[in-house]
Picture 1: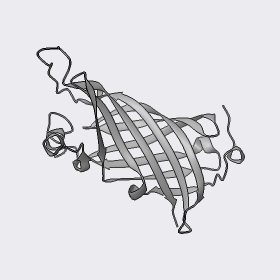
Picture 2 (picture 1 turned 30 degrees about the horizontal axis):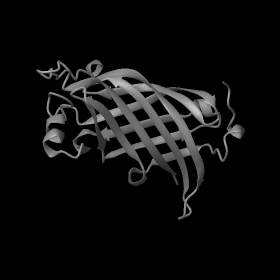
Picture 3 (picture 1 turned 60 degrees about the vertical axis):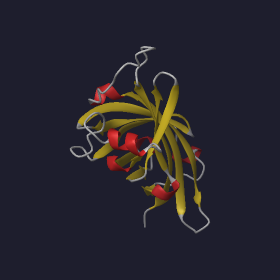
Picture 4 (picture 1 turned 45 degrees about the vertical axis):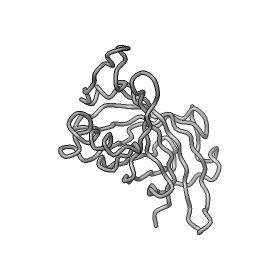
Length: 187
């Protein structure tokens, strides 16, 4: 679908810096085939460039792996080892968009390269444009939500074991990544 800047309420061509205080980078994975474990990363940064033609817009982001939190210190430390993220060798995850395809003025598919553990794969985020507007402090902001599902084994994260009694995997291969982003217009 072709979407023009005029069709997106408040749209502004500009550079926007992701505000980590008002944003969240999180993930969800099924644990032991029974329940889901959620985690997030506290340290991340990025830039969204909204172009005059919305399909020419770009997104780049970096996540600091050591900032992972699942509300369990032992699990967080295990996630940083070579069993999972290998944070000492690969301290960041990175995303660079390559293509944006609009389904409506508020919905788009953002395809780009996600790099984890030194492996780069193409992923597509289903994105929802929140709004453009001024916040309570006079700053121009852009809101964006996005979600994708990846298979961790595609990125070399192979650790697993089966639960003896059920045969379920301790950690599912499918991981849902969710972003809630608020970005501030660069000066």
